[in-house]
Image (cartoon, rainbow, N blue to C red):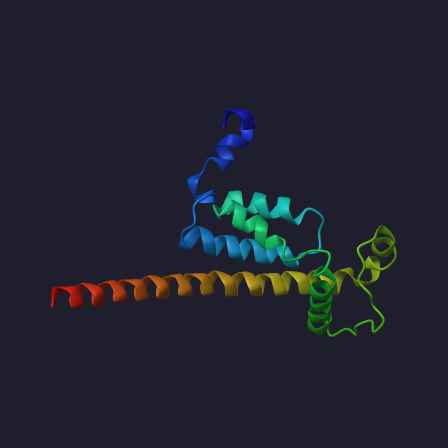
Amino acid sequence: MKGLGFLAQWIANPNLWHIHRHSTAKAFANGLFWMTIPIPSQMVTSAITAIFIRANLPLSVALVWISNPLTMPPIFYFNYLVGTWILDAPAKPDLQFEISWHWLTTTLGDIWLPLYLGSVVVGACLAIFSYFSIHLFWKRHVARAWQKRMKKRQSQAQ
């Protein structure tokens, strides 16, 4: 870790690298939230957030990859529609999402508010849902494993 200089103190935390219930639930919440936000360098933002909230770092960054050039248009269009619904504003019927500088400079100015509002709302909903779902799934999985273990011990004792 010496070669990383000042970053070593931040990324040396074992919670950033181990898979356990809390770090995994935080990683899902973090990664899925930033996946929905249309900004450049989502992975960097997710990594920085993972460090501060002590979420699993590789999982946080990997989940952002759900939003890729193939999936970005439908994700961001859905977020835009959610934003227009919240604002009670009409959606542009001919809106086409593109990943280009021209599209950003000509179209984003007209749709930024519903797009980002919808993205934050969808991201927050995904984060909350995934956080609690991971905790619930993990607890059920552990409880079932214990039950199986107890049944196996009881059958061996007989």
